[in-house]
Structures are given as structure tokens and as C-alpha cells.
Image (cartoon, rainbow, N blue to C red; front, side, top):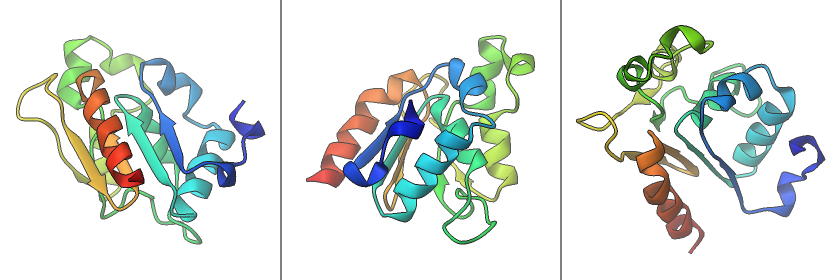
Length: 143
């Protein structure tokens, strides 16, 4: 379990995606604490597809400011969620929530294309097609 992990023992926290994240990460204090701890310690935090939904729960170190405010981020787009017919089955739409939180949300020019944002030690990938590119960015940051 993530609550058993000391993020200080690792250089990177990589959170994959999938619709299960929408149930498992929203309201999960353990996931929130792990992300905030790793991010605050300047560790690499990487999230892909629906994994970024966990970021919407987090705040910048020592503040109540949303973690993503002012940052370039991506995640499963509203259009992609509509295309898979899950708009009404997720707690909120990642793209919409990030924009509400003041993030600089970016997405690929076409649905399902790879798109990755890197902002400091935060790496976000839009969708499953972005997994390899996001992992490559993590490797670059760790080199």
C-alpha cells in the first residue's frame, strides 16, 4: 500500500492511469500525502492518463493553493472521456478541474495522440498513448 512507502527512499513517484484511478485516488489521503511529500521534496512526480486526477486533490507545500495552479499539466481530456462514454461515471473531468484550479492545461491537437507536459519535477501524460513519452521524460530528468 502507498501508505507503507516512504517517498524519501525513492527518486520518482510514477502513477499510472486507467479509470480505476477515479475511484481509488479521489479522496485517498495516502495518495495525496505521497504526492505532496514527493513533490515538496523535489522528487519527480509522474502521472499519466487518469492518474493526474490525484493531482487535483493536492496542494502546494505549506499552502492551500492547488498543486497544479500555474503549472503546465495534461491528463485525459474532456473529449476523450466523452468518446469512451464515461463522462457521467467519473467524479469530475480532469481537464475541466485543472482549468478551474488555474492550471495551464494542454492537450494534443487530436484525441488519443501522445502529449506530455513537464513543469519542474512534475511530468504529466495525457492518455495511454503518452505513457512511453512520459517515461522517457522521467528518465531524462533522472539523468
